[in-house]
Amino acid sequence: MLFKTIPPLLLALSLPVHALAAPARPAPIQALERQGYQILDSFPGPGGLTGYAALYLGRPQTLYLTPDRKQAIVGQLSDANGEPWNAPLLNKQFSQVMWRQLEASHWVADGDARAPRVVYAFTDPNCPFCNRFWQDARPWVQAGKVQIRHILVGVIKADSPGKAAAILAAVDPAATLNRHERQHASGGVAPLAKPPAAVSAKLAANHQLMERFGVFATPVIFYPDPKGDLQKIQGAPNAERLLRILGPR
Image (cartoon, rainbow, N blue to C red):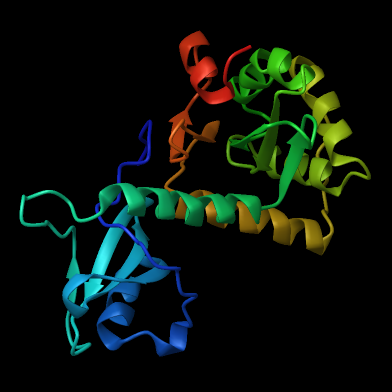
């Protein structure tokens, strides 16, 4: 399922998020997990409810556990005015959860670590639209305004995993990625036939994250909007979207 921006998750969190221990989750929440819901965080809801931020088929979802811990409710809560309860706060909280998962992925940096703006992109080494985004972003990257963190995956061609592994396994992955993108038209880096186990594990983790976020093609770019909420765009962005993603030139 592909969409241009992450839809708002219609609940909010005003207290710190708890880390969840899977064995301690109540039976109704475990049942939803078996149906495909991926639990990210829990939070206190109104009226004694316990809320859970989750992903289902890559889409944000809220779950609520009743005070007796015997039932779970899927969907949004509305206040007395019929408005989603605390939507802006949860949008921000959900964005923070997903951003932390992007930060923890196995990415390769393109640009200065001191750049004031960071953007994440799921990138396949054989993807022509990924290469176009890389080329179009040069003015921002070279000016030190943006660092693009490429989460390498291998989904387009048979040798895509080998090329992604070659970049991840390099002594200097950033320089290797740069060289690969400059030589993209002629094939770029040679694929690794037998990647080290540690590199294969990194690539597998990136693929799992890609699936968790509902990403099925490349590039998919995640960036913060002016409010700090996480947004998502698929494909090589046009000039207008580049400004939205990377900021002013």
